[in-house]
Length: 498
Ligand SMILES: NC(=O)c1ccc[n+]([C@@H]2O[C@H](COP(=O)([O-])OP(=O)(O)OC[C@H]3O[C@@H](n4cnc5c(N)ncnc54)[C@H](O)[C@@H]3O)[C@@H](O)[C@H]2O)c1
Image (cartoon, rainbow, N blue to C red; front, side, top):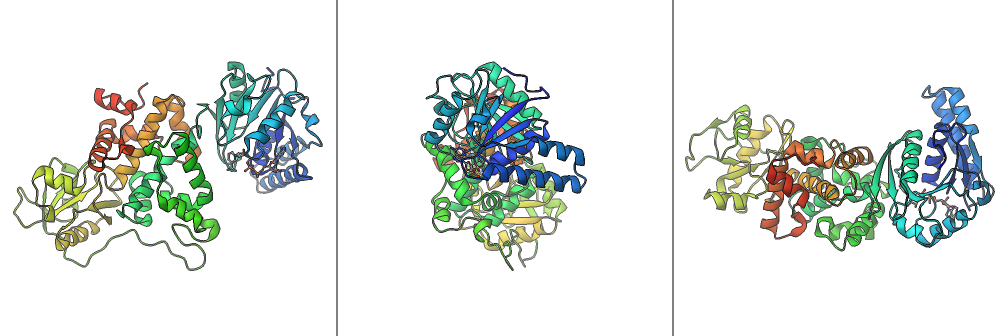
């Protein structure tokens, strides 16, 4: 195995598309000589030129020294044939996502490169083991999965195939670091880490929309304001494009033999079928283009704010919120005033029935998210409209209010619990270490917290309660807690505990 930190290191990049170009750029700026090959005439040279232009622009803007930009550009070498890969220490493949074509390329490379050279694939969905399966020497094949755009996205997943040696894995981790990335070692499983773990955020949002609980704008606002996500799930899907996120979602679901945790909704497919792809087509869950406006997520009311409320159950923070908004707290239910409660995992209907409360005057508030900017409230079917409106007016004096239909776990509890649970499941199946799962999800998807960190911020027991309640009330095994989570919640341990 060659030293990945050697000053004269040369690597090959096959495929001069979006990914190959990005990989070549970070390699060249990492001081590595890069041979680029593409079957499309002139593509490799064009890619090298586009990188040189990009680096010159960065230097012009003062973002990197001119000499560094010039030196990096000089390290880029378009290759005329695959034979030019003969002296490369590593060849990274970033060609079309097709198993047969990738296998044929690696078979050709096997006969060209040196005995100690490493062959790596940037595939986003094909098993590394399947790519390696037809090769003579399978212990030097691994996945090196970058994210788009490569120069911006710091994460690289290093994926071990069935026969990949430790030395190859170590070398690729070292190479990843030299490319300025943060490498995370991941198991060879469908979607690897980030494309698998990224499902719950959007699929649970789609489930909430499917049940007519809330609108895309409301769901997005709750996840931004209540949990610090930079983008709501629907803005995110519109940005990546339905033609990208629907196939990945379907692939991960099918590869997991239809695990209901990973299930999407008919609307997701319909968006693709009707060309509502998101930003790129001008219309997705939201409209884009001139004059387009994001619908408001805020519920308002002209009703007089409730002057007095009764807070049911042990919910001091809810009481404090009602007081801050100007309501008097009653010591007991007076049979007239709104009854406020903060259920965890239950909907208003189940909460009212279990506690023998008048469901018409019950208004449930989600106290699990950060409520300093926005609060979500919900009521049971048959709720008194006047009572609901008076509580909306009350809370709107101090917060943005999002009023939704009855739902076990509101919006925020449901989505955050599903994200945390999928993180726990990734730890359970050994996809990567708990700390690497969190790191990868923060870097790969810009999550404010990794899924296990999120579970611990909410409390592993709280997440477990949300899920078991949602599973019991919906009858849907989509909400079944990961055994990883159940054990830690039962023992009072953090979700990050090994
Ligand atoms: N685009 C992404 O967001 C992304 C992210 C991670 C991984 N990936 C994976 O990276 C790979 C490349 O994706 P991309 O988006 O850069 O694709 P792309 O279509 O932009 O580029 C692919 C390039 O490969 C070339 N090519 C095709 N067959 C070839 C062959 N046999 N030999 C040499 N060159 C060949 C094509 O001419 C093209 O220039 C795929 O496996 C994809 O799944 C893509």
